[in-house]
Image: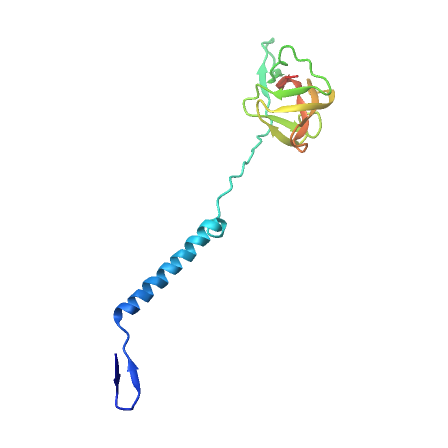
Length: 168
């Protein structure tokens, strides 16, 4: 439909339904592009996820003390009692054998040196399997073995035989 406005210029009137049709088609095209992006590149719209971090808190070593019944004196006599379980029955640990951590109730501290004062390198959980590489060494009333995890050689250290059991 054409008309003149008095200046000899023609103006064209566009029907409203054509404009609405164009807007709907444009909206459908935009939705199609976003659908394609979501299906082919899901990482582009993913939100960052929280990665859990395991924090191992190692309490300081404490000893248990007991008084012995002695003749009455001015100073009581204090004795330290061992807090370590005996080695598992049938423990035939030797270099090259596979051992698993047992009966710790919270993990075995694998240390840099074979003694209780040495710094902890790794906390081995019950039923983890390790390979014995060095030992035995006697210290602090226990027998120590240097053990290394099969999958990750950074998980290693000296562990007390009281918490190790031969598996093969």
